[in-house]
Length: 602
Image (tube, one colour):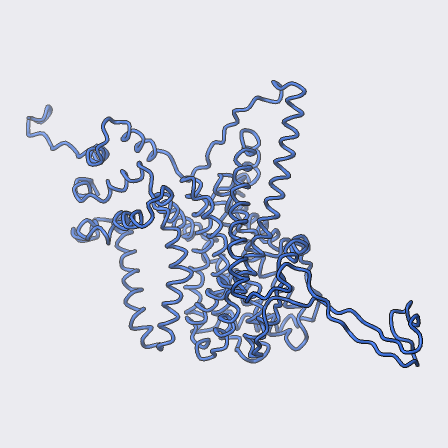
């Protein structure tokens, strides 16, 4: 058929990608196409509009207003109670991991030959923090080893970097509780991933610099020489004061046993605390009432005083179970409590934050200063995150509490990013104050390790936040969030790869020697960087590439798409939670069909 204007042959009709998918999947009509096009026009990372369908306050009667006030009060109590139990479940989860991995942690820290390798030190810091679920415990072990001359300050720097990376495991685990809703899971997982990506990028940049020139160690020495710190008192631990009455009824651990096994004081004692104090017992020979007021034996009389140990009052104080059995019980119970509390918190937030209330909360949290001072809003968020973490005395609790708010759409990812950075910095100030409370023989080493931790996060902020174009964790986190929205098993793969499999692989290669590590890891790193560069050029500058490399259509499907892997996962896990939605399947198939790829303009 001739062209109506030029008279020449008409160009071939463009291939309808969505129609092709509908035909392939056997879906008649255009409803599927319309829904996909509508989804593409909408920004999945935009904060959702939580509409309030209830009656306004003026339309309610007196009884209706009283009922609404009562329901609001009960919701507030439910939120506070759920948050309290959520924090307690994190504490119990940390105790469970310590019980399960106490011996392994001690054995890992004992091998000085391994700790001398910077990459192995980074991996050990990640693994130990994931195992004990507490960056404070990991940092205290490192401080004890440095103070005991079992570890040099230079060798401790990579471990501190790994400890910082391992703290993001908890928030990522918390985001899994919102996997039931696709959009909420996208935002929640992206919010947790931005924290981990920032820590990984900072560690990967500073680790080679520290190995070559030791800038963080030198800077900490300069600060120590100028400041001359003096011993102080412990910082108030407000969060522990609130949660201790409940958690100490369940289990209490002896931290000295874990630290002693790492510093070389080998012991076969259980990590579970059996005795929680002593009671003075007096036996008088001449008078049973003498000394009753003073509480001690009579001076000059023939009597004796002995200290009787007092058993602890927690649930596992007199149990005959091993640490492994108790750890498994606590792990299952804490995960169940954590997920239940998260579901309760998310449901209450969704029912409470609607209409004007949601708009007011969002306006306060996501507000920016007027121009030209809008850039100060992010730095204020960093200070807020640091201050709240200092008050809570736990970065894991703060970041884990932020993730559900990102999921329900109260906090945007761009605003959560500086809050996470402030949390990283706030937990180092807490460690610094704890280091100042160390004994005089450990003061300098403890403060130096805490300063290195602080400067590590400060340099990370300078690298990945000060210059807006270098805020790479945000687009990378959005990419991971979009992947998990379509393929929810990607979240589990991310957890296993970033916090277990890849660290274990790097640790095993480092044990074989630097030559083996360079021979195996070097080509893999170069390949990953090359693929990333080609992918970026395909999107922005395809003309710079050879025609063969302008798309990945020539690769086998299992190398260029997650769809074959998704089918494999669905065969192993035929549940709805593991399967993508119909629209996501259609859209994924569009970009996986070679005919579709070849028909689209680059």
